[in-house]
Length: 139
Image: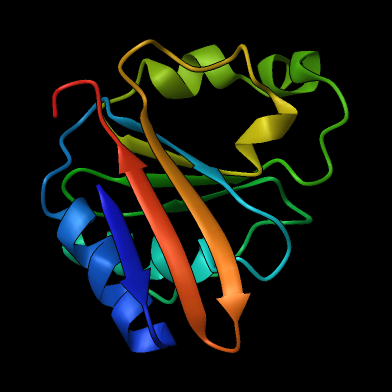
């Protein structure tokens, strides 16, 4: 599915739409450069899961957890240099929990994701305009 958004509110709305379709155990891998709108999209995704907490990028902590049904576990791999580092912080344990895992900078750990991972590619088209491509194995 290919979507063009014209502002931050539309990007949030598209994240919400996806969030409403996710269930426990789902992994969402986000791809895109700095300023592509990944964290904005995750804010919407969290809202779609019924999470009202303020979502921020866990760039320095690597992972943030948000209570919900299901819970949201938000990773930012910007500072990860090797895929092994993700496994060192307990990636397998996170995958085994009844939660939704969403991962920014997924390109930094390309072999870490299960085959049914939802892939979201975001691209800054200039200003507030974004190109969002959502790829699902079940779609």
